[in-house]
Length: 297
Image (cartoon, helix red, strand yellow):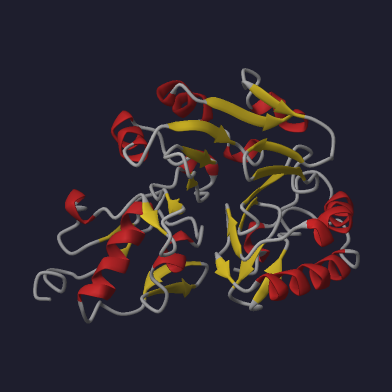
């Protein structure tokens, strides 16, 4: 561990935008202090050091700095499997052009993959993401995460998907989802239009196990529950409540995988109960000005 603790040790520099990505990947090591992330303590073993390397390679502003200041490409863990099945991989390398949103690779039984939302763009990263198998589709959850969609879709020779409500963010999309009814877009993969955070927000459900929720709802460590970011709702909090009412009882999943906010794995029954409670709570919310500092990470 001498090399990990050499020099000035791990730190977070002043470019941090408080996006929460590092805190998700290195809990207990990185925390929120005065409205931004900070290293709470130095790693004690190789496992803790690995978590900090993951946080550093995911941070959209490259604010998480290792001893000596230079990121080691050999310690880049992405794309990183989220469970033992290897069905979903976290892309890391979050982009400042998507406000630091998480993105994912969904592996399919035939060896292909789908990308949900987009990490930062580079040809070298694209090569990493297609190494597990050809990427056939890039699925955008909403306009805020569309920045690199066309670049990745063109590199992969993949179809780019978005909902008509957010089509202005990807006017050259290859597939446009319409209306509010769920649509099966591949075997075992369902697109569920979910207006609220934006007019064209969409959830993607896979195998009745994984829910890629974009910014529609997320797991909050503060409340230890599923929450909506009512302080950052660009379209309509009332439409978001209506989307929950229309779909909550039809959503079956055990992995919650949002764009912003933390991930969570719970049994189907518990997820369903929490979604019902969230639906009830959402009808008590009223429109409010956008305030990023009020998000309950």
